[in-house]
Length: 467
Image (cartoon, rainbow, N blue to C red; front, side):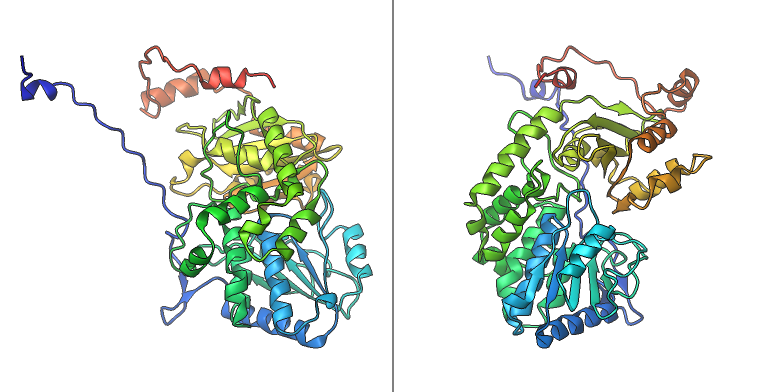
């Protein structure tokens, strides 16, 4: 007997539509009085940077490149290196300084090491910025800072080009590429893939490259997206082990290089691989990078089953881990794409094992909160929490607290100060029953009837897994 057409329509299953997530470039740009787009930084600052780089190449004096240790910073550093040589600088006059584990360019030890290289010019890339003395003490050394981290304060006497106030904020590699490609016709062809790799390393490989970002079609014709993204994966420890399978969705993805994340902190391997390669495919066969990625994947799997605790208001999820490897940003990004809640805004992963006596923590905006209005601002949220203190906590935490980006921030602070910060956030405290009841009456929370779930791989048993 044939079914009637009406029978088929008795229990229609409505497919739940996913909430569209805006692309990184879907944002209002700044414009000048004539309506022209101002991007990726101010025209004046970009021109200052170009003249500085041309002066470096023409001087035949030593130039010291100081890139950050993540993929974005290293790719930007290689772009500068290739631009200088294209402009006529001898490779022997170009040096690189890679800042030590847990250090910054502002530490006295690092400043002395840079000065000992006897540079005439220093180009600092993607290191983040804060008020500080000159990059080195020698008044005869000139400094240029290329950056995109949120800051209006920089080391004294330095020339600065920053993308932080020109949305969509360019990565440091993209900003460097936009500066350098106008200086020599070979830069676009020799450095385009470096720009893409650094940008994908920072913003994720689903980026659409819509305006005002440059048209990179020629790059993807020369180098396949698979080769580029595989190289980014190798450099950035982006892949979780198959058993984890947590989605990466945060616009500021796990950007630090694999070699940097290992307990051995072998950043020079990543720099050397990028500098010597002429295509992404050449990076894929580097045995030391392959070994480093394996170590990181194993450590991520070991650490990521830690169950979170939540702030009393439910806006912050806190994961506590202990690892000598820099896996806290990786885990923060993974869980930011996985945890969902009507209240959740920030995922914070704190690592007490990376530096003795210190807590290195990384924060990411939860995917479920990315379209909130007003937008979630991690830096403002962290500072607001710290300001609840009535003593001198803010001063004791120092300059390495709440640095980076509005969407991806963190810090390095002493253990005791971190515990005080957690107390201010009321991490682990349950909401007051009266508050929960009030929210339910106001319709802010929904009560669902949950049927028996046949799925075996649930969050409960996931966090219960043992490494």
